[in-house]
Image (cartoon, rainbow, N blue to C red):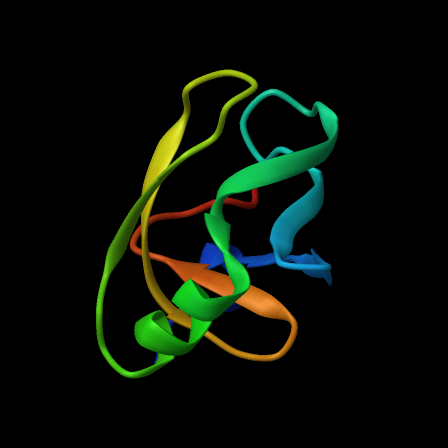
Length: 77
């Protein structure tokens, strides 16, 4: 079980995935370099290196659910 400190909320708009705030630099409304179909692949066990375009902060996404991206490291303080 991944702790809540490793989870970050996301939204889907069309085929794009975005977060309301970057966990690293705080930039608002960041469109992530991943597509909606990749969320299913991650849910099925594939890991994804996610590099935030605003500040180049990166994490591995190890799982997803309907609301959160689950990372391999802490995203919340």
